[in-house]
Picture (tube, one colour):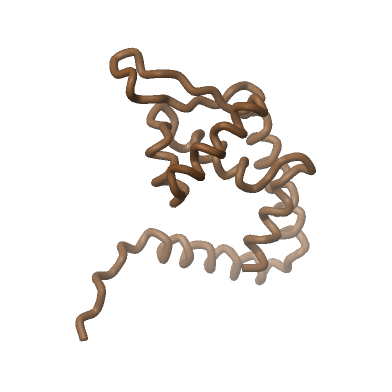
Length: 134
């Protein structure tokens, strides 16, 4: 948990919040499929929280919303140039810190870290097991 917390600290500039960066990253990952419902699912958040986050990000100039030309009930969420720049800067800042931190490890520690990362990736992509029956 401390590592995740540290990555968040390293990724956030003074004026950016982790919540905003998570929203921008989710829009980036979803691409053309980014809409409020998909964002709520991606971020495991309530629609009211997504709506508030979208309003804030739009007010800051990081996102725009546009109605689907074929179905006006659907809203697409898009990164603005400012949103893309903010997200790229946060990712770069986090990557620079991580690269510097890893470079301080010994060769053996770096190999161990790499192996641990592979195991964590496998665990993260393992399908959820059905609930056990008592």
